[in-house]
Length: 239
Image 1 (tube, rainbow, N blue to C red):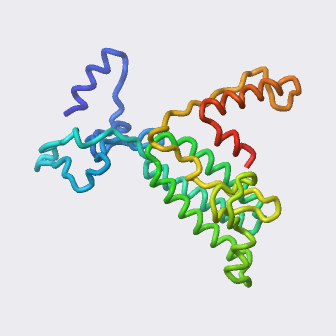
Image 2: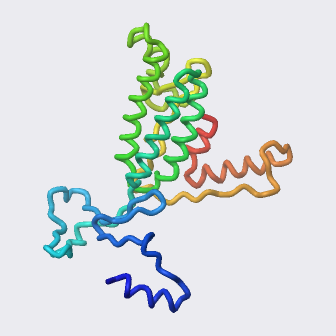
Image 3: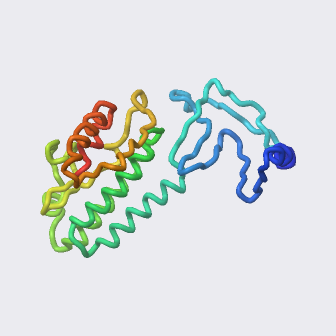
């Protein structure tokens, strides 16, 4: 057993193997770690190519690594939890103003999307946006049960693009009072050719936004973030 081979190796280093927290899986199924599923997947354009096959003992009969690449996807658990969190917010705000709903939901969407956007997340972002659209329609239908569809759509959705107000695409759900839009997951998607790990740049301990002496520091920091590709985050920071 592989566990028996690992235990003496770890023991020499003063470590102990926890069998309850250790999982052994094949490279095709992968494993979940910190909200991601890491595994080997088929390369683009190889949809119908058979890349691997198992024998009767569960071992690989063959594995075509030349037609596969390592990928990190949002795990099913993280994806499901994100949907449940958004659904819970819509339920909690069902009897409240759209302002509270938009502000709370934007925090969740921005936090989840930014943590996943440097990886293969295009399909997950589109699926979450579709689910978000269903919740938005359900919310306005409960809020205005006696109005028709056209009236509800014109009141709660921005049907035209207006980048100055944050309406980067059509059909953006917004707060009718303040005009603040509800962000989409897809807005934070980075194309593969530009994808990179985005590290958070901490603010210095002696600097604070409410301190007048720190204004120049935050201006320089915003310019630095903009030059490093954080333009969308700085632009939508107040949404």
